[in-house]
Amino acid sequence: MVRKWAKIEKGHLYGWKKTQSDTRRHTILSSAVKKDSYATIVRRLNQLKNVTRDAGTKKTTAKDMLFLKKKFKK
Image 1 (cartoon, rainbow, N blue to C red):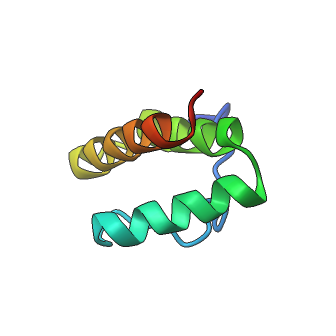
Image 2: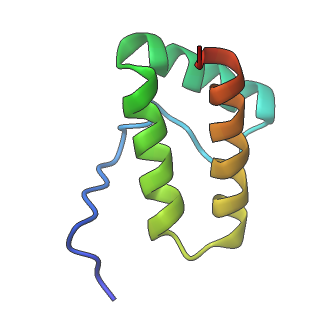
């Protein structure tokens, strides 16, 4: 089933992969927030979480969204 509302483009998370270590993913996301914005990166992670059917990806994106919230949310 193709979800036409989802516009996920390759490379918009700056090299983020679910198989990377927590430290590496957090470093990538922190630099991505500096390049774009907190809201943009969280939206992209949330969109990936909602579209994917892989349980591992859902768990990792949720964990990384919590990391971003603790680090950047004011």
